[in-house]
Image (tube, rainbow, N blue to C red; front, side):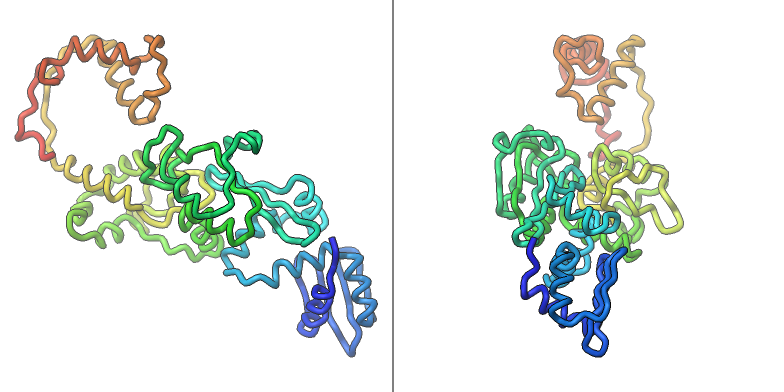
Amino acid sequence: MTVSRSHIAALRDAADTGVSFDGLSVTVDDGTYTFAIPDERHTGLDAAELADVATANNAYVTNWYHWTRIDRTDSEQTYLRWLEHADGLAVPQRYDALSEGGLTRLWGELSITTTLDRDEAQRRYSIRHENDTNTDRAELAVYDDPLDAREIAKHDDDGHYRPLKTAPTLRTGWLFADLSGHELLRTIDFLYPATVHNWYLERHGELDVSHWRETAQRQTGIYDLIEELGGDQLEWLTEACCVDSQCLKRRQWDESDDEPLDTPRGDGVFPCREPCSLVIAVARKLTLLEREQPREYTFELTPSEKEQLETLIDAVAEGRTEEIREADTDDGANRYRARYLRAKRFDEHGRLSGVPTSEDDTEN
């Protein structure tokens, strides 16, 4: 890695106000320079001697130049430095790791690797699905335009539309390679919108959390009725929509600032600052259903049939129906067993045990 004339000139100029970055310190006093890094200090240097010392410690100098000469927002700078473990690895160790295979962080289902182009002393980034970490590049669809991430985010591996971008259903089989920092951030924003900025705000204690009550009160039109939900209903709603199996965000909102919810917040690296549009849409439907009054019905089921209904509901809720093998008749959600139960217990109108549901019993 080469320290260029531009690096040296920039270092001399910056020394007027003092350089202090990632262990590098450079100052000037009465025309002589002081250059210091951990365990090494040089004083009384003239310009030529400063250039020699800087060249001998090129990693510190090029690292300082890289992070102070590109126009980025604070959140972008903090995130890119987090990706390369700048808060835990000293510059020499970091440069060795970046040059020898790179440093990798997980972001939701993304595996993001930072490498170092030693010739230009620039970082390059690649993104792939974490499940493709050990997949050969030749087996992946390779992209370099962040706009392509919009199409990747739309459907899962089975071709189903993904209404929630942070659902743990991102499709596999792709790779974004050789991205600049700017291109990396754009790609992430198409895959997981606003997660980097909210992550940054949370780290600095500035995340603007909007709890359920204030979010519900802002709703208008067909959604204003969701204010009716509260207490146990919100616990059930967040258990249905916001746990790790459904969303990769870590929920930071509650019923209100003084009314925390018991539902696990999740282990995601990036926070959720308010109920999302999908939660609001589900809440509207549940609000209508919760208006119904309980009725007592009498059904005749064997103990195994009762357990089978419980298994079927659990299988649908956990999205595992497609995993159940046709020959696995021990599983209550097995397709043949479900069809048998329907043939035995449902009448020709699809009613369980032929028991009618009065129209007065339902609003939807």
